[in-house]
Structure formats: structure tokens, C-alpha cells
Image 1 (cartoon, rainbow, N blue to C red):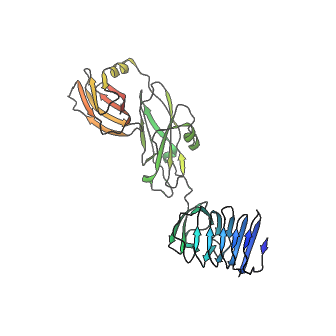
Image 2: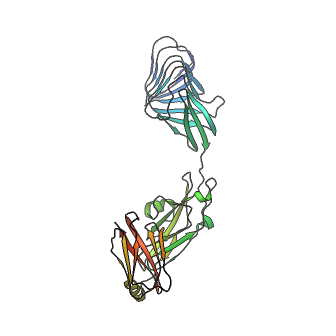
Image 3: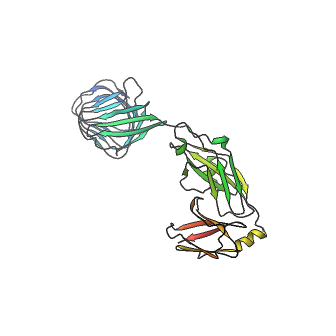
Length: 354
């Protein structure tokens, strides 16, 4: 339905039902127009108060004027800023907004465009939210009279994994070290790209969705600007699959190519080496004793559960101490892995910090 002739008088108007009503032209009516249900295409002027209820869908066609008070109680408000006369609401009185008013706006890039102007009442962006597919938008206010929109074209292009997405890596009995070439992106600087490292015991982490559904995320929250990762505490003689997902600052993601690695079988020599090193107490609240039996320890490195090195201790090659003390009392509570390099090889021990 369309009102093509002016509405006048002092009475109120109530729009109900699920249908669409078009309100055009200059309407000198001074009563209150209540938009309760359905769709109203507003293109012109209402001289009295205007109330929009939460279940109503309001479409602002070009520039519209409310002669007295505008009350917004939530729901959708559609606007188009790409036409010759952009959608805009002018209010001679004040604005009272509550609930969540969703502004569904079609626009190109724009800066500080006043989508609502009033005498008073615009003091916060809290009652408003934006729905602009393909665009990034920010609302601001010039209190108490303007609600402003700044919009930029959204970045929808995912990063490009380096070297065609190839992941290289090696594995020992209990560790895997993987590395990859840094990705590039059309908008996010290379050193601001975030990488998520996933692990699985099945070949089921080939895509982004597969990684997020089937994989175990090793670095919670991802890590910015890394190109290698060490995974500790693996089971000997076991096949593992690893993949990396890279994300830009807009949240676009891309997956590398899955890397398959098999840990080495634990031999007699490796088992004997592990038996010659004792780390205690475990769990510990701070002090760790590393006891060796006729082995020279050259290097001790501690990793957190995300494979990040947190401390390194190096001894002179000539030293042969039966017991070495490490203080990890300043470490957060959690699980750590201690990599011990000896004159006869490397072993890894898991430690719980309480």
C-alpha cells in the first residue's frame, strides 16, 4: 500500500500487520505515527512524533524528516547511501533509542556521514549495530545531535601461503620440528599474520574446516609471525599429521599442505640413555633436580605445551656434575617438556609445575 497524498490532522496513525506501506511526500499530520509491524518505506516527512517498534522493518528512502520526536525501540532499519539522494533521517526534535537498532546499510567507502541528525538525544552508539556485508563500518556521535558512519571496503582476500603451502619437518622418537615459508597478504603486513598449528594422528586436516574440526590446535590463539614450530611429547614409532592455518587481521584464513611425519622407534640405546637421566621432584613447585649417571649434560632447554622455548641452560663441555638444579618457581602452573642434550644424545622429559 502507498499513501501518495498528504496525511493531515491531529490524530495518530498505527501501522500493523505484516504488509508493506509506503509513506511519501510532506505529511503535515501532527499526531504520532507508530510503526508496530511489517515494513514501512519512508520517503518524505512526518510532522509529528514517530515511534518504531522492535518487530517493525523500516526502510529509509532518500532523506526523511521527522517533525517532532523520533523513538527507536530496536529492530532493522535499512538505508542506501549509494543513490543520488542518500538515505538520511532528519529529526526536528530529539531522538530516544533503546534496544538494538540494526542499521542495514548499502554504501561505498564513506567518512563521517551523518545518517541521523537531530536537535538532541544522540549521545552514544550503544543502541545501534551495523549490518554491511562486504564493508567495515564504524559509528560515532557528535553529541547530542549526530550519528555518523565511516565505512571502508572489507578485506575479503585470504593470505597466500608461502612456497605453495609446503611444510617441511623432521622427527625424533618424541619430537617433531616443522617449518614453512611465511605467507603474504593483500592488506595485512607479513609480520602481523597469525599462524595456527594443528596436529592429528589421521590424514584428516587438509582444509581449514578439517583442521578446526578434526585437528588438535597446538598453539592456543595462534602465534603472530612464526615460520617454525616444535612439537614435544610424541609417542615413538607413530605417524602424525601436521598442518598450519594462516589468518590475516580481517580474519581471512588459508591452509598450508599437510605434512606427514613418523617418529622414530625407541631403541635399546635410547631407552638406556633415558634411564641414565632422572628429573625430580615431578610434579614440582619450583626446584628441579637433574641427576645423571656418568653422562655429561651439555644443554637443557625447557618448552611449554605450545612448543615455545622458555629457558635454556648451557654447561661447559668439560663439566660432569652428578646433580644439576633448575629453578622454575617463576613459571606459570602447567605442563612443560625438558629437552636434555648429553654427550651421547638427546632425551625429553615431561614435567608438571604446580
